[in-house]
Image (cartoon, rainbow, N blue to C red):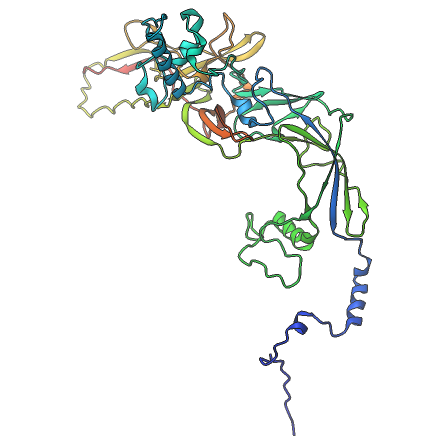
Length: 503
């Protein structure tokens, strides 16, 4: 006789003591120890948790850039320091308000304002262009206060700034250049395109002086936490909605697989600690010691051949700490210019698309000729065109090999040959295509050939608003260059014969 015996483990719903289930008992502890010995798990290193970090730190203040003494890097965002224009203080509201206040004070005093059109508001951007010509311009009155005999008290207290910041924009490179000092070294910000600015935007001319006074800082570390990180303790329920393998690139990518392996196997071994470092300084960590749970001190050191936050010229233990504007309020585009090399015409075109907030109209395409009967016995008539008409706001740059000993793209003025007389096309209106620092006899604007990529670039000018570390609003005008997908081109031709249109 054959008997089938089936053994099955079933839960006992009448048991109320869960302590034995949570204990995670092992049926054969000797076997488990033997397997651990075979796999080498008993040869582990000291993996005690860190309980304290002691840092010997130095802070070297970053000084104000040359010509900008009123901008403190400890409080003002670095973007506002580097990108500010000289006239940023004169907002439209201040120009209107101060102009009306001075006009009111002059009407009741001994000094009267002359009736000149040059003193009125003009060239205001959209949507303030309706105020053009409606009253005196406070900025113009401030500039000419000595000539007009206007007392400074009429402009308010404390009044406009006595000195304007130096413009760090390079019109030839279409980028920013600044050299703020930092102790015995100098930070060099070269060819900054505009936008986010942080430690990676600067290089240093040399290391800092190690003889500066250092401060001992003691910090308590904590575990590194991030979404989908494995929890360090038993029986902790993890969030299944977060998947590391689902992050781009997906789990089919080798880099993601390596990252997943590192996170899963070593997540509990990562600790983090915050170092109090004031903004606008270069923080240097001369020594770092970690105290573990066994009371031992460990001196970690940075790798000698690699560092994620190294600044060229500084010691690997030094880090530039800027006050940056992470989420500034961005205003509409004030000026927009696209620049590109036209190989067929052997010119560089600079096209003004937005001027003072106004979008420039695109020239209409010529209408297609209507079909008509062709007289094969008659002779065809043609009109002679010296040159293809250039649309408005298209400005050519020609190559000149000797501009102060350098090869440059120099702004030219095209001739308008569409009428009976030869006239020059209008000059550029946007400030992006002028050089306020040019000397007598130099071109109105010139470009460095290396600053113009093959696909062209777009240069935008707009107003930015952020806050300083003290909570005060900071307003500045940003100029920013961005790449294009294709440069602007124009089919420029000379000596054309156009079929005669009797109409």
